[in-house]
Amino acid sequence: MSEFFDEVVLDALLDLVKLLPFLFVTYLMLELIEHKSKRQTAEFVRKAGAWGPLIGSAVGIVPQCGFSASASNLYALKLISAGTLISVYLSTSDEMIPIFISESAPITLLLKVLACKFLFGVLFGFIIDKLFRGLFREKADVRIHDMCVDEHCECEKHGVVLSAIIHTLKIAAFILIATLALNAAIFFIGEDVLKTLIISKPVVGSLITGLVGLIPNCAASVIITELYLGGALTAGALMSGLLVGAGVGLLVLFRANKEHMKLNLRILAALYICGALVGVVFDLLNVTF
Image 1 (cartoon, one colour):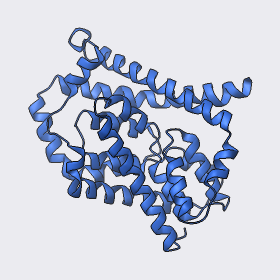
Image 2 (cartoon, rainbow, N blue to C red):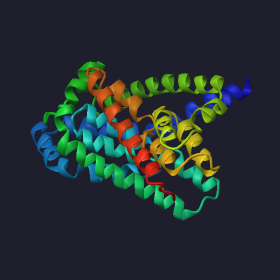
Image 3 (tube, rainbow, N blue to C red):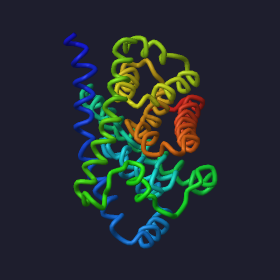
Image 4 (cartoon, one colour):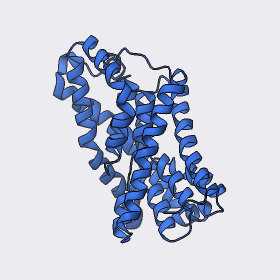
């Protein structure tokens, strides 16, 4: 029982505590924008959008998956493009960096992986925005007021700070419930089963680790990183799994953008394709770190 509490409940609570500052700052910013000119905001988004993937990838590389949660909210409100969102997801490090450090991995290895995540985040972000923008149907108008109406937060009554707190607590409750369910599933299935599942041959292994990486839980990136450092995965499989590992970003996306599930699924599919493609190419070219 103690082990279940530590690995399921305590881990979920600790992950949530790390996220709360990012969620609150994001919603506070959105509330402030709502009280400013929407026309000016939309114009700023339009102008900044051209460099969005570069900025998103740079922000995502910071070792904290809270940025992916923030990006999901911003995308749901049409404040950033699909390419920018994908760039944040691809560059998000989640628990990868702490594992590399704790296992005393060479700093050059860590820097190479981070560089790949950043560069591929930028590359695929720009590709999506330039070539596949129509698939994600972005609009210039912001939807912050719509979010407030959907959440029944009565923002005008509560004011900026209290409304941001209400939004934060609502999304935090959703994340906690989902994370508890995922932690429980991994606890009962067992990490050894997941490890056995993703140890495979080149190409096939990259496709499988890409699927495992989609699990919105830090356990996925931990397992993938440990297997690679233990010599059980190729560099391609490592990149495939780590590129798609967006932390709780996907959970927040499906919650914040629940009116557009088809769009969310396209984002999910695009994320997997980008990560798996890199992994397969790495395997075919026998790329090593």
